[in-house]
Image 1 (cartoon, rainbow, N blue to C red):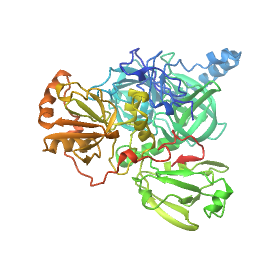
Image 2: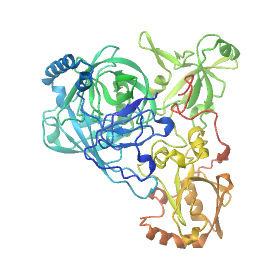
Image 3: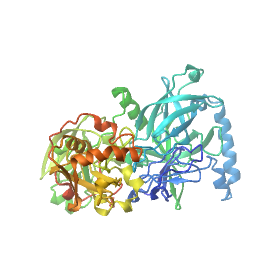
Length: 597
C-alpha cells in the first residue's frame, strides 16, 4: 500500500507552513493527491499516501498524505530523458487536436481555494491561510464535482471556466472524506450560459483508452494526457484512509489535476482523477475514482440532503485458504472468511461473533481469499459489496457457526473510530480548566504533534482500541498554560485523563459537564499511570479569566461544549486495559490475510 499519493491541488501562493511543530517537515510518502490545497497528514505507520496539496517546493505532513509541488501534466519531459520524447510528443499533440473541438473540454473548470487549517495544538485558533488550485467539472443542475481535498478547510472557493478571465464564487454543498469527493454549486447564471454538463459513463474495462483533463501546475491553460486502464480493484484512498473501488491508469497526473475528469473514447466521464503512486520502482501509476463511487456519493446526497458515508460491517476478517483451518471450523468447501473481531458499536455485533465464517453477502458467495465475483471473469475484494450499500441499509449474511449454517441480517452504518481521522465541523473541541488544556485525541492532532511526543501507550490506544459505545473519546491534556494555580503540573502534556472525582470520563463533553456540576472543594483529575492532579475548585474558576486574558484566548471552551450535555447512560470500561489484538484499520495491519470490512 505504500506509495499511494492523493492528487491535491497545487498551492497558488508560496505561503510557508505556519505550524510550529516538528511535524511540518517533509516526508517521503508515495501516494499523493493532484491538487494544490491544505494537507492532512498520516502517522508514520500510514505514510503511504501523498497528496499534492501544498505550496510548491514545500511539503506538509499529514496522516500519511503529503502535498508536494508538482509540475504540469506534460509527461513528455519524463519520456524525453529516456529517448522517447519525439513519439510521445507527437501522440500528445494529435490527441489534443482530436479533443480540441469537443465540447466536453469546456465543462472542465479550474478551482481556486483559500484554506485555513485548524491549529490542533492551540485549538482555539487557526493556522495562517494559504491558497491552492485544482480542477472540477460540470455535472448538471448547477453543480460541479471535485475532490474533497481540493476544498478542505476552505474559507473561499472560486472557479474559472476555460477561456474566461472571470472567477466565480462557489459554495461547497457536501464533502465525502472517505471517497474524496465534494459537490459545489454556483448561483451566478452567467457562469452556466452556453455550457453542457458531462455525462457519467460505465465502469471501464482493462486496456480501455482514457483521457485525463485538468489544470495541473506548469501552465494556466487546460491540459490533456492520455493512457489506458491498467487495473481495477479496491484501492486505499489517501485522503479518507478508506478502501473503495479505484481505477488505475498510466496517464500522467500531476499536482492540480485533482478533481478533473477522465474520459473514455466516447467522451463519457468514467471517473475523477485524485491520486498517484510515487515509487522508485514504478512509473506512471495514477488513480481515478470510478463512476460507481461517484454515483454513490451523488445518490447519497440526493437521498439525505447531505453526505452520510460508506457503510461497513465493522468486522476484522481472516482469509481461509488453509485446508486444516477450514476443517477445524467445519467449513465444507473452499469458501468463506473468518470473523476475528467485531466492533462493539457496529450493529453486526448483535448477530456476529468471533469464530463465525461469513460465506455469503446478500446471496453472493464469498471466497476463501476474501473476494467475490466481479463482472464476468474477475474477482474483487469483499469490501466492494459493503461499499455498494447506503447507511441504514440491511444486509443478509450466510454464516457457519460451529459447523451449522444459518442466515442473519444486520444494518450497515459507517465506522465510528475511537480516534477519528477527521474532525467534524473542522474545529477541534477543547476545555481549559485552570490552565490545563483538555482536547479529544484525533489523528490530525497526532500528525501535528508528532508521534514521538505522544508516548507508546497513547499511540497503542489510537491504533488498537475500539469504541465501546457511541460518542466515546480519549480525552487528553495537550498542554498546561502556566499559572500559580497549577504549580507543579506545568510540564504535563499529552496524557489521558481517566477520571474526575472518581467518575470515569466518557468524552470531553462529559468532562465539561462534570466540571460544571462539581460542588466539591477540590477537582481531582486521575490520569493514566495513576498520575494525580488536584486543584482547588474555587481558585481554579477564579484563575481561568486571568489565564484566558493573558493568552488572548476568546473562550475557555469550544462552542460545541456550551450545548447541554445528554447522558448516554453507557458504562465506561477501564480504557487503560482496552487494547485489542489487532490494529483498528487496514492501514496498520502488517499481514495480507487480515482486513477490516
